[in-house]
Image (cartoon, rainbow, N blue to C red; front, side):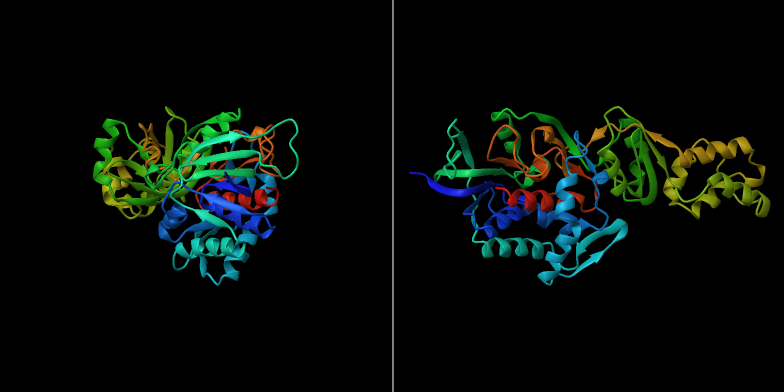
Length: 401
């Protein structure tokens, strides 16, 4: 004999818990299943333990998808303001940082506690350590209302449900339990998958560049980084493996293997103009000394290799000035690759949104089957956008399951 629920949600993460609470508040009998030992593990990790839970500037332009209009409906119906109001209602202190990013002042655990409190109020059942072994469709031509559409097989028994929600996320950070489960469910029901790859992830370097740049490990600078389809200006961090920092994570989601990236190490001024000014006011000052006042010495020394670094600026030709300026404003690097899913913050690609309703998050050809959160082919920029997608998609699906 199978247990029976109106709504069964697989995945006790951000989108799954949000959806569960909303469905419960509508009077639905809701069960959340998860193969992990504790809910919300990625929430607890996010934002260095402070959770960058949303952004004040959310728009569809902050998301990547093969269907770029898909996210508009959900993020307009459940906005960052709506989630901020929920956070404030629970008395959770938060702060705004650069680029509209909002973080908990104390701990990300407060957000998880809030979501679990919402689920308790909505009488949601949550079962952890419960892997799903099989999903069987009970759909028929004559599908009377209120009869189950799916039977879920677990190690502890069978569960029937009218609405099945897949909120299992992507494959990034497998160390906290990420799996391709959601993609397999989609494929089981004939829903295509947009090819997945790591997003918001550090770059590795080609062997020659890695050896040359290893002395820079630990240095962080403001930089403008571009690839053929995008440009961002934020902090760049040199690591012992390659390049990281917010600006690299941002560009990585747009970068394609084999492409060259362009790095401007002085994005807020013209080095050529600076040199020309120094030629007129302090012509005896060394090229190296001028740059030491603007960038870390180790970085300056590496970028000045092959240039007259110790020459007085007054004796440097205009052509050489242009070449030096280019070395700092238009540094070209072809990454060797990325660090992969192990450190990626998100997964690009996923369940094809062209087969999912943007209003309800229900699969067009499979009544009662819903996909929410990161498992879908919707990927936000760095800065709270991915958690906002979780809240928005979970909330909206919760109104229809």
